[in-house]
Image 1: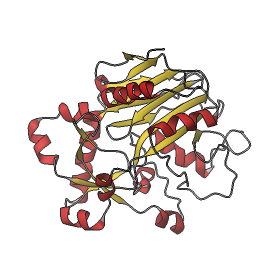
Image 2: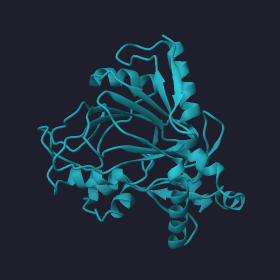
Image 3: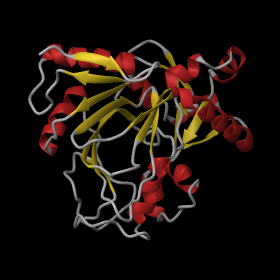
Image 4: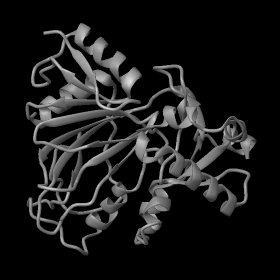
Length: 302
């Protein structure tokens, strides 16, 4: 069957038809999907529901999976296979998380605009999120294309920020919510990294902003000035006309390119409704990106 892409938004995003992800995809189908990702940044597949094994098999066509050692250290058993990230409000017994559960409070940070794993030494290239249980209302995921954000900046601002670097930390984004309850060991395991604010997206050759709620400050700038700039850029990128909102149905799989997008989850009644989503994350193993976190290069920029 031939794969077809139907745009979901005037600027980016497409729905994929003609691909059954429960079966192995051919090289020709993969090439079509890769080209679609480079163009649209976000691709939506409408079912069928996948087993964890099927999701992992499909995800690994795009590269090496991220190792999922969570930021929070817990002695609780994992609810999902180790190759996937548990994006849910459920505990190890498939019961709703309590309001005071650290896992629930940590996960609230997913409702801030962010880019997956920008705070890790090896960031994320693609994310593939699959819906097992959805809520009757709320719980949508919103996306923006940061290439569009760059394209629509005033030229003077583009010139001002083109060579800037920002420090990213998971503890920065969680502190914005007032959640700072991390152990010394947890903090030491995920030190801050440095990322270029502007980069060239490899798949399309277009310039893109690289930002997230994890971005703490601009290297070499006074912290308040840098944070105001980051705030201004995120506000610009997330104007309503730039946002695609995905309302989930069971069986949906959405893949997005973290190198040129931001996303956020929307609130829902997590005390009364189950939301079970599972994410496969592909590592960005580009040596140039790995260099972003190197002490020597960051020091030269700062």
